[in-house]
Image 1 (cartoon, rainbow, N blue to C red):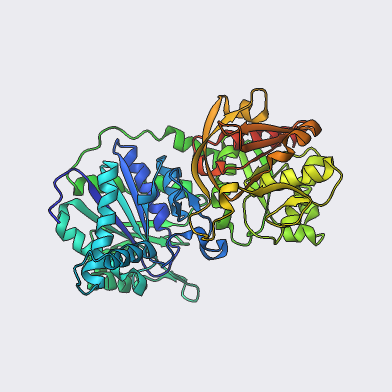
Image 2 (image 1 turned 180 degrees about the horizontal axis):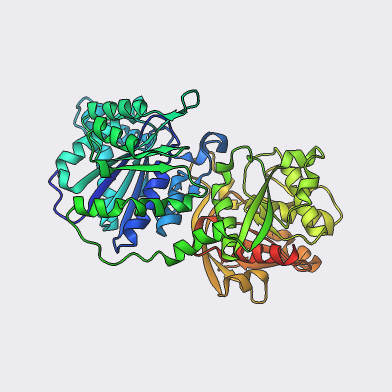
Length: 539
């Protein structure tokens, strides 16, 4: 590979000591800092698991599956990137070991390697480097931020670190920068933070041929300057390149910390570049100010199946929060497992909510509890927002009530239901593979004037991201419309119901798509904004 001859710079992020240390959030926040200075940002996440993508993984294993415009099912960190940097990413931005090995093995089967022995080095590392450069070639970005999943020392991550080591030599070290995000454990018995695990982590990284240019030191307790000096001394980095990052009340404060320690300026100085414009943080600072100085309070119940792991609904949570902050409201979320409602539990909590959100999901467990939540919202005129499955179950509940038949259901949960108001999409009925075969990605939706949806969006057509196999059964469209179900969003050919709402209700709306994926901190999604407005008015 030739030396890099264009303007693109590469910033690599690795993690040390423990996982979930905040690499993705750090990368996202730094991306925002660079974008505020006028640079175009590209992002990539390198995930070391053998799954081709997280689409078939349990939310308990991996958290939320974040869907992009092109239908790629990706890691939840791509949600952080999109929200913080305000970019629209594509499938090149998420690479997994499964993808890499599948490509190499496919090419070997086709004879592309001319009978050679296939090895991790150079074949796997070459494919990793090819995918890294593909992001640079397709995005024309000034900076590409690349996060390596897992922790330094994991056997699964070694091919990625080796590929990065090779790449630094091939494209030129003056085009690359390495940030190591590490954890400082707190020892209660001696009331101190320890740097030794960070030292070992950096030594492990250096043994693989990579010396970090910067260390982000994470901790739950204040990090004294003397500790930063110690890390700089033992890890061979400049003192001003050791950035203390104590756990914050909100991760929307992370860019402010990076600005406080002049991280972007340090990077630009390293690359001998100047900012293209002065950063404008007024809107972002107003967001943080709303977090700390709210004028209102709003309580929203999220009734789901995976509420034990909040990351399973991270985009939903953030979209609600974006809308609440835009109304200067502090958000309180009641995480309610739908199975608890089925068992007669948590109803007192549900009754405290000013609004109810029922998010997506798959499988039979907890379905009736979600239907109960929809019935409670409808009968008590509580603002309700149903997302994907939440929209489908809102329709099931409405049908049971309007047609006086408790057998109404989705064929996903009852294949023999006499009232299949939700059914498998026709083009899904012959599919046997589960990965990447749903209706995925960005699709247009026409809005019906005079509806809640049209008033929220203030336009005639929108595009939203989908992830589903089942849809509203058009055989029931006319009957349910007569009973008061409004189909306020339709595909351009009017074949697919994309948004449904209930006429005689202050705000009860469900979407077949996932609006949460397009919400931004300073630009809340219109439907979430309308939902929170309704919740505040009715509170």
